[in-house]
Image (cartoon, rainbow, N blue to C red; front, side, top):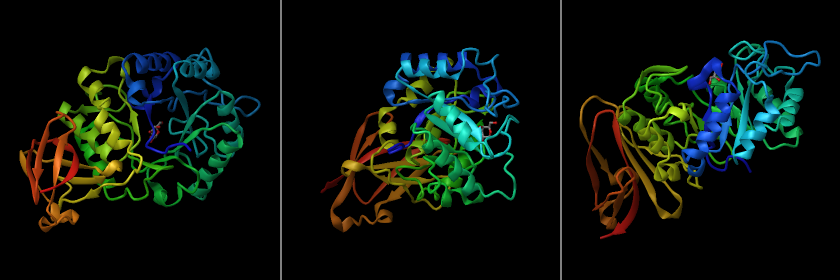
Length: 373
Ligand code: GLA
C-alpha cells in the first residue's frame, strides 16, 4: 500500500518553476543522498510543470523538452533510481497544464502508459483548463484507473486546490494525497493562512490519502519561483512543525543544493518527522479559541502524545493549555512529562495545565507521556 504515512520528497516548482531541467533533478538526487535527506526518509523527487514540449507528437504522446531533458525521462528515472530514490512527474486533468503545456484530458490512458514506460513512481495531477462541464471526481478517477492499468505502482498526487470539495471525493478516485488549498509562497502570511484554513479539515486525512497543504518553503529566504518576503528561521520552524502536526505530505520546495544548515537540519528533525510519520496518523485536536495561537494535541502510537503551541501574533505570549480541555481532570491524578523536540529537554511532570511562554511567530512542540502522581 502506498502512502501509509504522508509522502516525503522534493518538488521542482517552488524554486525552479519554468526552469526545471535534468541537471536540477540529478543534482537534487545527489544532494538528497549527500545531505542526509534520503536517510531522514525523503524519497520522491518530482518534476513539476514545464517539462514537456508545447505539443504532443504525431502519435499523440507527450514529449519531454529536449533542451531541458536531453537524456530523456527514462535515463533520468534510471539515475534517480540508482540513488535508491523515486521519481515523479506532472500533468493536468484539464486540456492544458497551468503553464499551458498539453494536459491529459482525453489522453489519460496513453499518458499513464507513457509515464509507466519512463518508470515514473509518482504523478502530480493539476486542475487548470478543466472544462467547466467536466466533473473533477470523474477526471481524477479516470486517471486513477489509468495509472493502475499500467501495472506500475505510481503514487497519485491530486492537485485540485480543494476546489469542488475535493476532500469528499478524491480518496474514492484513487488519490494518495490531495492539494487542499491554493499555492503557497515564501512568506509567513501564506503558510499561516493555509494552516488556518486546514486545521479543522484534517479528518479526511488518513493512511492511503493525505491532505496536502502544499510544498514546504523552508530555507527559501525569498528566492526562487515562489519566493516572496521570505521567513525568519523561527517562522520556518513554525511552518515545518505545523505541517508535521497536521500530518501533511513533506514535499520540500527549497533548493537542496544551496540550503542553509539551519533549515537542512530542521527538515531532518527526527522527532518532528516521527510525529508526521506516526503509523496511526490521527489528526490533531485544535484547542485554542483563536487561530492566532493554535494549540494542537495529537495522539501518537505507542501510548504517547504530541502537544504543539503556536504563536502567530507579534508579541510574546504565555500559552495556557488546560488539561480538562482534552478531558483530563485533575482528580484522575494524571499529568504529563514533556520532551521538547527542538532542544531535547525533559520537563514536568505538569498537572492540571501547562502555561508556557511562546515567542512571537514561533512555536513549542513536545512529545508527552502520561504519568500518575
Ligand atoms: C499550479 C499548482 C502548482 C504548480 C503550478 C505549475 O498552480 O498548484 O503547485 O504545479 O500549477 O504550473
